[in-house]
Length: 331
Image 1 (tube, helix red, strand yellow):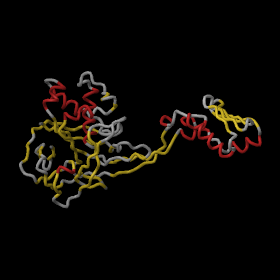
Image 2 (cartoon, one colour):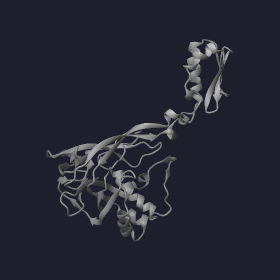
Image 3 (cartoon, rainbow, N blue to C red):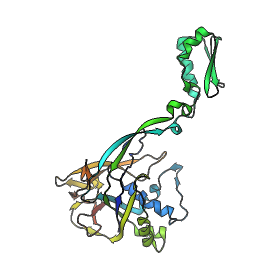
Image 4 (cartoon, helix red, strand yellow):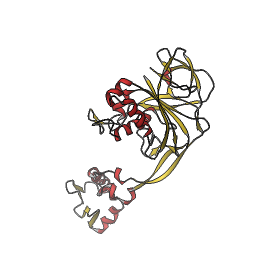
């Protein structure tokens, strides 16, 4: 086991969406382990250091590359350097949403027929194939160009028009009122310096990258350009591969976040909060597996501050550098 320690700086901050969110896109207050792994995996792939890998389909399920590479890491964590404070904000922005609107209108014509049947009992007939509705053989409603048309007895037509909506005949994505929408987007404004650290499996990385795996890993780490969304730009200032030390004591003080169930007790009254992160990647038909993590420090304003904890017997406390309180927990 070695520690890949990275020092860097966020240019403005970042956003990392909670999984499975859509209209309200809240952000986490600190990048989770999977995001850190993804940040490192990205340059490894794009710099062609991992030969023949262009994304994976796993058991017919599309997932993040992290799903494939997570076993190369024992743990990943980070903290913000002292002297910096960040803030969580939410913006309401207008987005083009037609791409996500329904492409089918098959069921909509049934809805209209049911609605008309209540107004004209036993007088409504439906031709599903051609999407034509007839009322008492006196009025016809049918698709016309990118909209619809009604013709026939005017006394019935005027009663019917108010019941008809465009989406009964036209895909919602082509209707003006559905082409954009207000999306709430969370962001963390935190132009700060940070330390990210990975506990890595040397044997697996050597098998993956070859004889010069250490140089490749350091080189790729310097090529990390974002942590989180593609707008979450970072500059990497220093990278090192460190030998680690397993501590024999079970009471330690750490700046790095860790799984909540790795400790028996948080011993002091330093500030901390809990975030829900997830194991492995997640994607289409591949649900997230959630774990709670203790984040040393404060949530609003956002900053890191070491906490004292008592570690469980089956958990190892690993000192990753000579910097005070840089200790990671791993099973």
